[in-house]
Image (cartoon, rainbow, N blue to C red; front, side, top):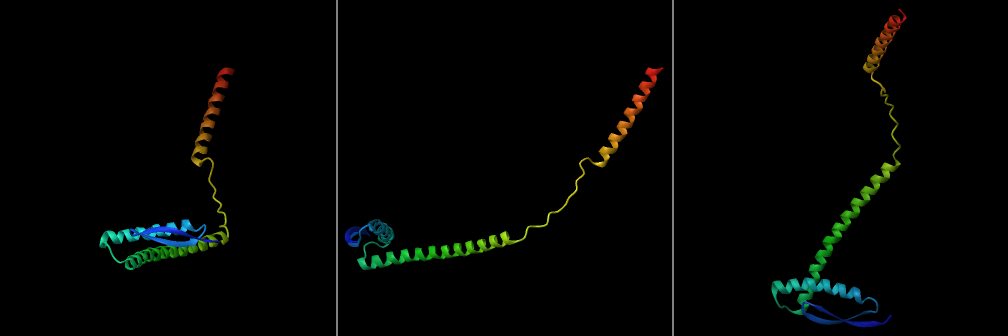
Length: 133
């Protein structure tokens, strides 16, 4: 691939930088990130030598990157723990089914219904006796 020149601005200063064709967007994105940090420095400190501004902006980005790498490492560790726990849960034998018997009709209802049936039969007999006489 051939190299091309890209013009970037960092901290109010313009630089011509060479990159491989097709990588311009990556360079511009990196330059915007560096410029954001440089603008913070310029806003806080004012004008400073170019090399110092680039060094400080680079260190600020490196600090952010280190923090993100720490968070990423912690997230990967947590993900590994959760994957191991999931694997253990999947490999664990299924629990034995527990047999639970629940009466469909409670005994008190059955007794009450039996009593009502006996009374109904007694009434039916009484009615049949009166009808027969």
